[in-house]
Image 1 (cartoon, rainbow, N blue to C red):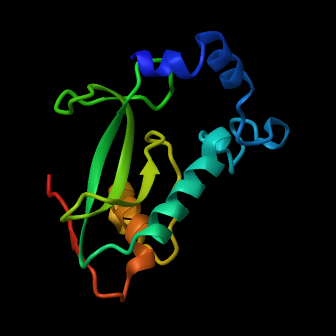
Image 2 (cartoon, rainbow, N blue to C red; image 1 turned 90 degrees about the vertical axis):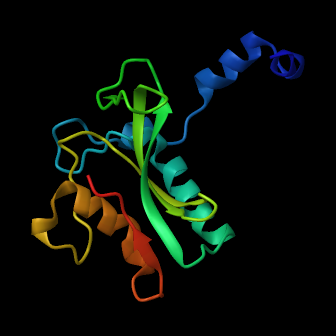
Length: 152
C-alpha cells in the first residue's frame, strides 16, 4: 500500500514499534503466580477499548455473543486454529455485539484452557463458556436487553 510508505518509512515504523509500551514490565507478576496475566503488556489497551466501546454508543435492545478471530501466525501460547473461520490461525475473541449493526460493546480475549475467570455472581456449574458470557453481559442485567447466543 503506497499510502503507508508515503506517511512513514519502514525504519521509522520499526523504531517506534520497538519503544511502544503500554505497561511497566518491572511490575508484572511472573508466570506461576496466582494473579499472573498473560495479557499484562496490553491489558491497559484492552481496558481502554472496552470502556470506550460502551461509553461512545448505547446498544439497542437485541444483543448477541459472538466469537471472532484476529489473524495471527506468530508464536503465541494461546493461538487458536479454527478451520471454519476465515482466518484459520489467530487470537480468539468473545464479543458482546449489537445484533442489528454488529457494533462491539465489550470483548474478552481467550487466553487458553487454563484461563481463570471468576465473574461476580456467577454460578460454578456454568463452565468456562458460561462464565465468559456472564462476564460480558453482567453489566447489562436488569436493563431490558435481549441476549441471543449460538447453541452448539
